[in-house]
Length: 516
Image 1 (cartoon, rainbow, N blue to C red):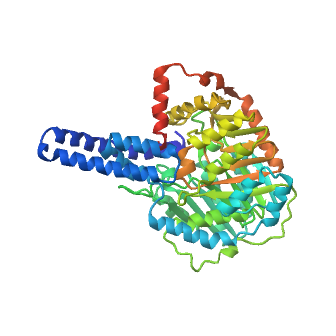
Image 2: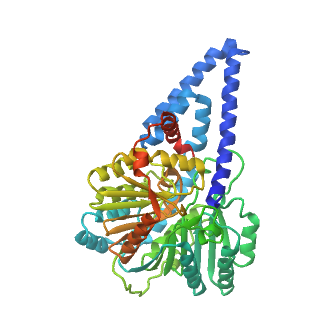
Image 3: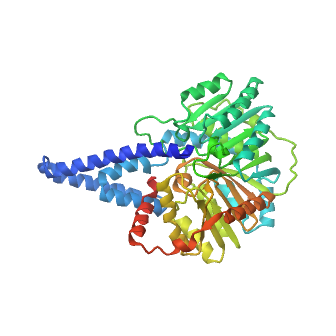
């Protein structure tokens, strides 16, 4: 199992326990109806059904995609007690009121510190008017500006990304921020930790932030104490605690490193052994990332600070954020536009999905995606299908070897609806591809942490980087082309599914995909 796979399995076990308990309650209720509660059973049954109906009406009225509503409506109407329990546990994905308020407050303080970008956006609209509206959307709805004074290095493998990261970390002069979904306390991390400890001993502000569920089973509270003894400030996001936690379902899936506010890293890889080929449990591991140097690093810094303060009880009233957002005289050597952005489940704006849909809608010649998991809303599936029907070359690459077999089955269940509308599907045969990227028309690309699945698009804190008119877009396209050569196209195989039981099974899996 991968780091994320093991964490996901543990998360799945927790959900399974609640599912079993709710089923037991449902069965006990049915048994009581037919035995000891004959006198009251009818009233209890009516009350339960009325409660279920009210819950269904409330869900139906929510301003979310129908793909997210229908599984809950069907489940609650069919098994009201189990459905209501599961909905409270899993379906309410906006956390507690306190957490929503904290994120709103920190964003109100941080986002205005980012530079105004009307000039850069104006240049984009002049040079690429058909796609500049995607950047405009991010400015208006996510609050993250577009930059034209940043150099970018693209890594088609996580290992050279780590090596470059280590060299930059050694040269840090002021502060180091690192935020990762999963950290494995093993050889690769120890190399990073030693550098962090050395920089901390030199007086730098060094911080590490990781997700508890993403790292559970590999890091315990002793890890935090160990780092603090070495001078490294460390926090755990959303620690897992027994019992129902309405915020438990929202995880920090971001991967960010910021050095002195001048150099930043992001991408798909966590700080664990399989990402750097030390272990290969699922064949070859494919991942990607980017290194930014210049003005755009400010946005990665703000994304980190948002999670560091809002994700804990620490106050930030007296924090001078400007010291982490230095104005430099850096002059980029490369042309192009860079727009790092973040996505949060604490609001009603689904930034990650909207960017992917917009790329498909704005593409004229081609639009390619690579993702480890493919679990789409109807809106996303429709956008991809419509682009293919317009004659756009739409392709999706998924893993040839799964890390989670059930999720892999759900991923494959989406092949048919896409393939029959002209979307081409590839499976990367050498192993597991963990990249989260898209590229369109040699003009625009994304690289970051956002999978094409419900958890990334609706439940997790994520981040990405929109790249336009840059050499990195060409390099990402070339990486896609190499990936296609190493992949097996399965479009024809899944265009027509004639086995009835397979079709029915896939439909059931798709219906309840949000619960995975």
